[in-house]
Every structure is written in C-alpha cells, then in structure tokens.
Image (tube, rainbow, N blue to C red; front, side, top):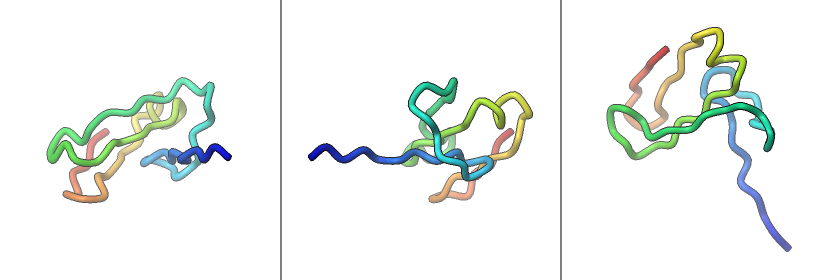
Length: 58
C-alpha cells in the first residue's frame, strides 16, 4: 500500500491537489520547513507563516 503525504497551503489551509499550480520552497529564514502555497493564495498575495521560526511573507 502506498501512502501519500498531504500538502496543505500555508496561506488558507486548503489541501494542495496533485495538478494544481502550487509552489513549495524552503522557509527563507530558517530553511527547515517546506512552505506550500496554492495558486489562489499566490495570486492574491496572501500572507503565510513558517511553523518553526514564525517568519511571515506575502
């Protein structure tokens, strides 16, 4: 049985679908957490926050 990790948008908390135009990148401050952003939050410039170091960005 294959298990898939669900990625969630750090801006709105919605699960990221496999074919969505989402992005993921390491936290610009600590680099330890992978930030996921959905297409809608990226376009709106919604704020996100790192779970480890509390860094926030647009």
